[in-house]
Amino acid sequence: MKERVETLMRSVPGRFTSGLHSERVAARLGLWLGVSFTVAFVTGLFSHFMQHPPGWLSWPSRPVGLYRVTQGLHVIGGLATIPLLFAKLWTVYPKLWQWPPFRSLSHAVERALVLVLVGASLFQLTTGLLNISYAYLWPFSFPVAHYWTAYLLYGALVIHVVNEWAKVRRNLWAREEVEPREAVTARRRFLGTVAAASGLTVLFTVGETYAPLSGLALLAPRDPHAGPQGLPVNKSAAAAGVTAAIRDPGYRLTVTGAVRTPLSLAYDDLLRLPQHTVRLPIACVEGWSAEAEWSGIRLRDLAALAGVAPGSVLTVESLERGGGYRSSEVRPPHWNDPLTLLALRIDGAPLAPDHGFPVRLIAPNRPGVLQTKWVSKVVAG
Amino acid sequence: MNVGRWLGYGLGGGLVVAGIAGLVVNAHQTDPLGWALWFGGLIAAHDGVLVPLVLLAGVAVGRLTKPSPVRAALTVAAVLSLVALPMVAGIGRRADNPSLLPLDYGRNLLVVLGLIALVTALTTIALRLRGNRRRE
Ligand code: HEM
Image (tube, rainbow over all chains, first blue to last red; front, side):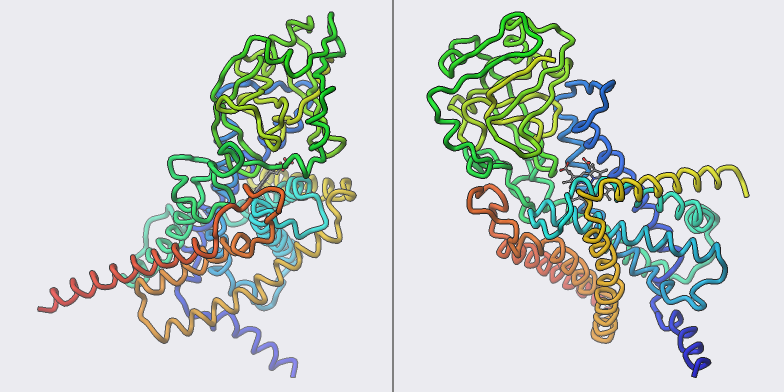
């Protein structure tokens, strides 16, 4: 009996007859995946440390659209990786059934790490796709789980690349041995199909951040022109629980903390301060972005009025009672930038409640979650 | 064993350990049990269900057609449908925020599949015509 099972198991890998289950195809797809996972890891870490900078780190406020580009690369590039991962796992699937499963201790460790790599890749791409589709079907915090799983994935990937590097070199750069013509054609056709699937995924989604292609964004979770005042919204005033507070006639914007002159300004006082108009994108962590014309007062003018020292860190607080994004820190490069506004208007009209009426922060090169809405307080520290 | 190899193992191993440590230390946010269910569930669903289905489909399609634009088109269509699925299902829609998932994704997916079918048909016809001409 045992012998029969043995013989059966040994015969499994041989039953995958397609010539595409080959080292050559795996090496090529592996190379593509290595590039795309590296881009995802680097842009993801950039996003993380923009949102949670250690004390010594002050990100520059320029180039204006940097975060928009890196996060667009992260999310759209992540979507483009989905076909690559499917293709790669299909190509190497027969190896899942290799027999004996473990030839030695080091082979067992190697396979365990491959399992981690496969699981972490599927986890990042699947939960990433579901997250940008707002389908939060899990009990964990997406950003926290996604962040730590990224280290797990990239670590397992580095080890895997070290182990397979000789095969990659042999297959991609070593002198071509003579191959049957059909094999070459079949491989090109397969890789071409995979590239087409990736390319079309990008073509039908990238318009959610690259407006010239927004007409093609048939499968993107956002349309950069859809929303109040033609601009998408992440958290509505209703969801934030501020619908009553923002209509309160007693509303005041206060500037306190390490200031020479504390300020308390009504909405009409804000309208009487010098107004400036800037064109800036709002660039969401979820990869979409949209540009608008914002008018309002420069944060640095307000800071000067209150007598804030130029090296201070400002904390901008919302009328929201709770939630992870009720306040955000604005470090010197950002609040000293003349493009950084406490905005009162979009395209000349007062902010819609969902865009942060009466006042919201808008700054260059900054994730959307840090563009605090419904602002009622600026604290200098 | 060369130095580069061990540097790679050190770097990779360090990242793996950091990842596991982060998942465990932040257990109140990463919910290790829920995380593990997703991690393991996705491997099981992929290796145990999705790939076998794809292999069966591959055998079926292989019997029906020679390698052709149709095969490539079916592959591309399947992948794009899978990517679009969460949006088509519309699980994330919220009454208070119509700017989330603002499009008719079911219709849009049909448009995309229609475009793929059209390009495939045109390519197939073009290939046939060229083949005929060659035979003449
Ligand atoms: C379909 C693929 C992917 C999508 C749609 C996606 C989506 C996202 C989103 C929406 C965020 C922002 C989370 C937030 O700040 O709220 C994010 C952050 C991040 N992503 Fe991805 N991602 C994908 C793949 C990957 C991969 C493959 C890696 C690792 C190699 C990765 C690493 C990261 C990291 C490190 C962050 C920063 C998390 C933080 O701010 O703490 N992502 N990703």
